[in-house]
Image (cartoon, rainbow, N blue to C red; front, side, top):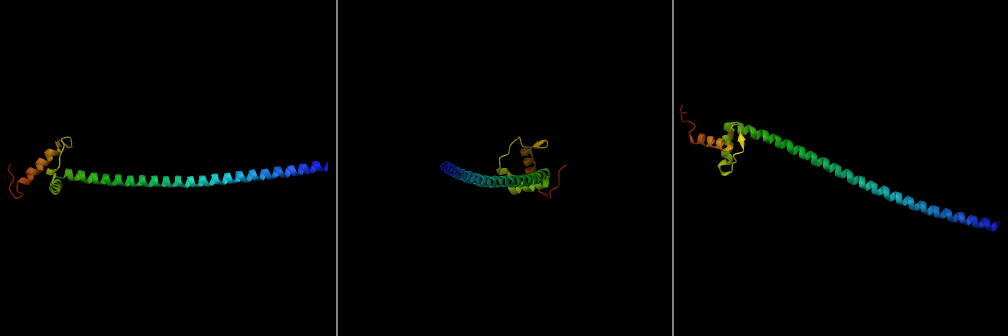
Length: 128
C-alpha cells in the first residue's frame, strides 16, 4: 500500500512537472504572439500615418493646382495680361493645338490677334 502511495505520489509529481513544463511553453508562445502582434500593430500604425500624410500632401498639391488654374484662366481672359504673358513666354515657340479653345475662338486665333496688336504701335491712332 505504501509502495502504491509512493508510486502515485511520484506519478502525480511527474504529471505536475509535465503540466508546469507545458504551461511555461504555452506562456512563452503567448508572449511571443503578443510581441508579434504589438510589432505588427506599430507597423500598421506607421503605414496608416504615412497614408494620411500622402493624402494630405496630395490634397495640398491639388489645392495649389486649382489656385494656379484660376490664375491661368484669369490671365487668358484678360487681354493685356495675356499679351504680356505671351511675350514673356515666347508663345510663338510653342506648339498650339486647335482643340484648346477659349470661348468661341481657338488658342491660335487668340495668339494671332495678340500678335497683330503687338505689330501696331501703341501710340498710333486706331483706324475706324
